[in-house]
Image (cartoon, rainbow, N blue to C red):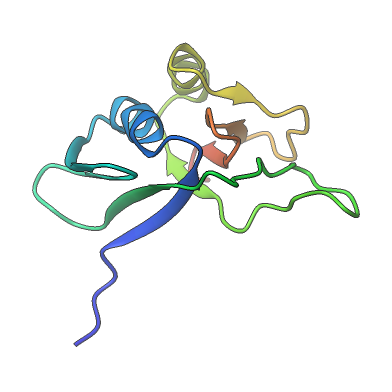
Length: 121
């Protein structure tokens, strides 16, 4: 049996990034260990994990040649883009300079990982 249980994001501070996503998504921190943290939805299901990496380099999005590139981004469906974007910003997310689509808002989390808030079309 194979079962995907989480996506792991490196960060300069695993606990700080776990708190950000806990607050953004309304999830719970399920594991909080030195250098490692996990968050997940009520009722179970795949969550997010975070590991502290002292050599972490923020990705650049969109990247140019020679930039640290993102390896993954998260897509988060929302009902209201403006409300969700304001919520994300209040928690420390930064809107990306480049916004490629009208029904998507790209943000960078406090560690620089891109994530997309979107309305399903």
